Image (cartoon, rainbow, N blue to C red; front, side, top):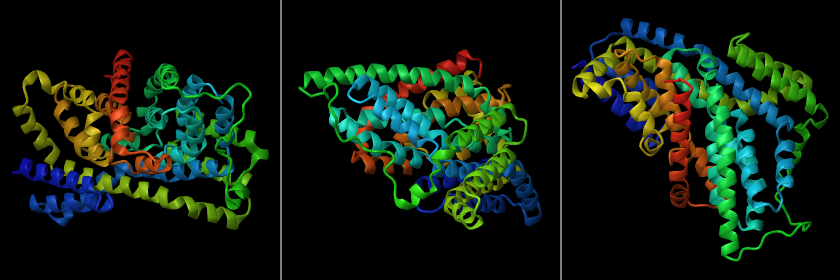
Length: 437
């Protein structure tokens, strides 16, 4: 009976998360609560489950709130804009160079872990260049999407934070082994971009496309074209100071000298003090970035309550025990790797929240009896899935990108799917060679 209630709870939770008809916070809170009541647990027991669950994720929620705000302020100062603008100008007229630069720009723009910011920064700057060179804008979107997927493994992005919330492992501990995977991923993406750029150059030549002649000028979308309000927030004179602060925050996260949430608290405070000393302006900036920060923090806390109830009631354990009885014995200990292999196609079935809060906890319970560490399960499921983040119809940021570039979802999927899945499998192979499984 507990297994049946647990399965119904997870199915209802995933279905509501997929429907997109309500905020993820609501099903994460209400569905497990109703499941606990149906399983015969009372308010006193549920209170204990809630306290345990939220206690596991409070540090992660704190990190997200301050990390998102910190990177938002860094964007306001204009720290990343000159880098992107320089690379756009540097590659003018060379199709292969434009493809490589697109990949690099996508990764740089995704340093804040926010897909919407990535596409807002890059597509308006790159699209006129692609049109001028008669390059496919779907190539641009695919390279940006893969680059964002690689950088989406950073601690302040959603997937690793959700995984930390589910496993209870400190987010920076999960991240450190992934740095090598990300480094190899960067090299692989640059190589893939060069290959696809060469292929695109041949396509343009075969179809009679005209490339920009050396020295010929053309209107290129200016990534520095800002509104008056945005321009007033830029601090070009403090560029190196802000770059030093940004680097110091990254080093602190990597070394673990302080808890990640506290690092971002300090980083945000210093950023506001050196760039915006006026108290009213500080409050205005905090208010501007708080919706995104608080939204993610609330989702993490709600997920904590959900996981506390599912674990405390024994639903996850019961599901795992019964699932082990059904699966062939050789598959049980390899379930995380099998699902990781199909992680990218599963983007079309599960949203990010459903994948990490619905699927991951069950897989953890199943393979735990075979001695598989929680971190290995996270790496298999996340690396196999994360490159496909921006090919999924469940990604709001992708719809924004399609709107900005005036592209179609179906054509994007047809153009990008096999390349992105291949890249995803290469990343899984790299992680396996590095011993992450």
